[in-house]
Image (cartoon, rainbow, N blue to C red; front, top):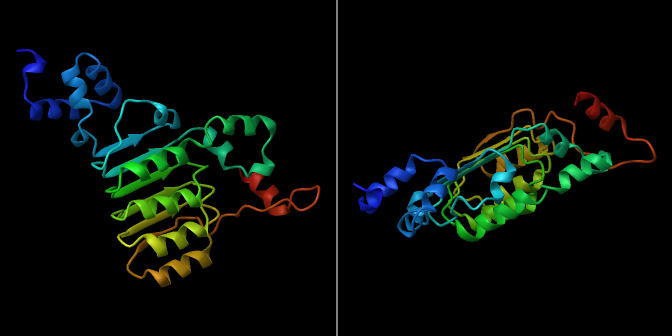
Length: 226
């Protein structure tokens, strides 16, 4: 019996055991399997382990997507987390190759995945408050937002959660140094039913603008900690 003789339900079940690359390779073998690959029912969950995976064509974004995670664990995450004005030319060059990838990808998610329920972003040092606010507006069924080591996330994201996260039940902002204790207090007061976790965030040294020819003491301490 040839694989193409299986019914649609069986083919979807078979595809569900494969990773994204394997699904794409199998889909290339014939139009029938390509059609299965493009079935939104196959893609309720997406997990990415590096930013380069976001540029591939081995997945589908659709209203069927319910869970999305982008977890980047790389030495380059530390470079992304350095404040822009403290970066060397080499560090700025490294960041320029990928700094817009997550934001651009999330904007595509906003346009195509309105039923998203959970989002996890870890090590996404360039994701912005504006992008997360757009996500909250575009995905009104979002129930869980987990952010970890996202250096550009600030209290503005907390404000957006209070304003637009009507279905949100859980918010994690762990190791996000620009989230303050005051911002967390305001959010908890505005959304008492929301479960908020902010491991180490409020205790970290936030970003500071340069003051004069020498870096401020807090920024120097931050560099020493790295």
